[in-house]
Amino acid sequence: MKKDNRKYIPWLIFVTSFLFISIFTNAYLTSANEASRVATIIALEQTGEFKLNGQKYISEDFEKFNFSYSWDIIEKNGNYFSDKLPVFTILGFVIKKLIPYNFPELPRDFSLAYYFLTLFTVGICYSFLLVYFYKSARLVGVNYKLGALATLLLGLGTIILPFSTVFANHVPAALFLYLGFYFYLKDIKLKQRHKSHLFLIGFFITLAAVVEITIGTIFWLLFFIFLISKKDKGIILFLLGGLPWIVLHLYFNYKITGDFLPALLHFNWHPNPAYNPLLDSFLGRVSYLFTLTISPLKGFIFYNPLVLYCFYAIYKIIKRKLFFYKESIGLLICFLLPFFIWWFFTYDASGASYGLRWVIPYLPLFFFFLTVYFRDSKFKYQNLLIISVISVFIALVGLINPWTTEIRALNLKFDFPLLGNLFLIKSYFL
Image 1 (cartoon, rainbow, N blue to C red):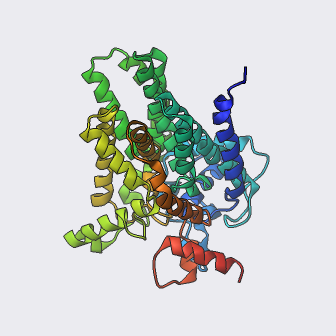
Image 2: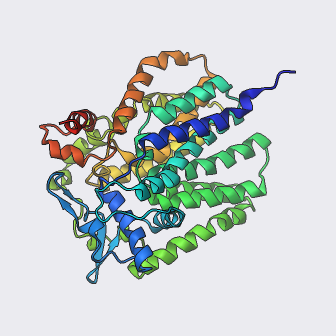
Image 3: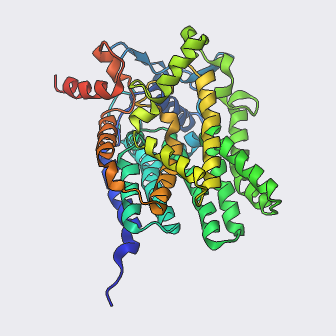
């Protein structure tokens, strides 16, 4: 009897995606976002403290690139700290302990330490994310061909790809959030609530919340309310699963800020707060909505065109009350709440990034419902060929540099990261 090799597809996805991402993983820093975290890791290695005083990684200015690495910090009583959530940085610090290389003196220098740190904190999360996305699709009855195709498009046709090559928290947050969702799906498959699954759901959703606070916290609250509404006694296991991460989060916040609030919520401590007075008007906010959604500057739909089909699929699932329609409603709620926060209370549309990187944790969930819709409908997913090619092209261009800091050195007359990255290729050979 011929052996079924399909069960090896998850292994194939992991190995090929990990080898692929290892080719493109960055070996030097080009953003204040990364420098803020790496500077903290260096400080912990050298002094055992979170203080960044005297760190070249946050004081280096680059006239050529027209930016400073000192943007993503806070100042408290004459001391400087990273404004990033601490748990992800601590995870990076633990991984760095296993790497036999030191960071270079200057952040722009080639660094094997940075390369392996990024590969084994972010790159490996990219591979596991694709594996569990495929496994979740198969879990709900999607055939292996459609599951593999959807996995391929998620990994190569969204900005998950470029942001898997730099030391940023978005792809790990996407993995942790999706793992929580995966164990929720396993309960649906078993048609009963499994105690260990509730513990793992709490573990991973809470981990997502302490890595990506806005998105993760809203998902955590929604699931918590769901368990209360069901009078599910397993809520204790859900809370216990997340307790270690909550304790660590609060402890490290206290070490940095002297209270339990994370540094990024101490707005008055930022020496360089993001602010644009033009956005204080009604028309300014309308324009900002365009920037966040469909503009070539940052629009999450522009840089992830397949999301349009995801929204179409979610709409159809809800309208026809297909399987997972309640979960589709929950996903929309968890997406719209942070989106309105971004729209009305932020000014920089995720900073110097290739597209709106804040949406990355949602993309696997969007693609899951798109895949489920294809499973349950007569829609010919071959019709996605053109938009899929465009999506893959956009994501691959993002690999040139997921941060737009280098583009500023070109002094272009437009602010268009996609085209700017193409111009960067030319500049590398001049």
